[in-house]
Structures are given as C-alpha cells and as structure tokens.
Image (tube, rainbow, N blue to C red; front, side):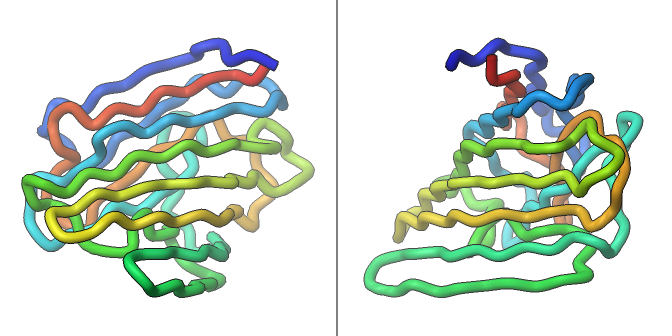
Length: 167
C-alpha cells in the first residue's frame, strides 16, 4: 500500500471554507489536515463533502465519534446534521491547532453513501484532545472531494489539506 498525492490546498486566510477536490474514481482516498485553525476566536470547523466542486450543506450527515482529553472520555453521535463538527473545543486562538488523518470510502460511487473514518488531534494552550470516529452523507451521489467551513471568521492562513489516493 502506498499514497499517491492527488491535490494539495493551502488556505490564505481570506475564505470561510477550504475545499480539496480530485476524487475521480472509487478508490480509497486519504485526507491529511495540517495546522487547521480559524481567524476568529471561539468558532468551530465543520466537515463537508464536495459535489461538483462545492461543499454539500444538506442536512443528511450522520456521525459517531469518541473524544478524549485529560481524564475524560465522551461519545457523540447524531443524524440529520448539516455538517459534522471537527473538534471537541473551539478554535481561533493562537495556540490552538487541529491535525487529522482520514480515510475516504465510496466517494465516487453513486449507489452507496460516501463514508469518512478519521482520527484527529487538537492542541490547545491548556490541553491535548484526541477524537476519532466516522461520518457519512446519507445521499447516494458522486462526490469529488472534501473540505470544511467555519462557524464564523475565515480558515486561517497556512491551514493545509492534502488528498491522496491509496494505491
């Protein structure tokens, strides 16, 4: 197994979303998110799939996650969401940063739901958080990428998404 880079996008701090496209077959893909943050304090990042180069904002996302920090472990699951939340705590502070590795399954198959299995780590000025889980878009449509939007402010300059095909 190897990873073949398909696309890389780096935020310049002027947009509230960041999209990484390039999925053009039904291979398994991997997404690496590096140094993600937001320009406004006390805001969140939300993950969405891309269809025809645009992030899907429908209310058909379903997810289940577990997150851990210090001595606490929590579980979270929901259906009919318009975006899965990427982190357990808010971003937008200088010392906060989120990193993630995710596998993307069935994205280019119109007969099944696209699925994402992820592990992410977030460092803040007071804690380290780990979150893992999965989400799906409960729509049978062909997707060409993945990205995220903020709950306010812009995606911080230097936030990077790298899409790989697993070969």
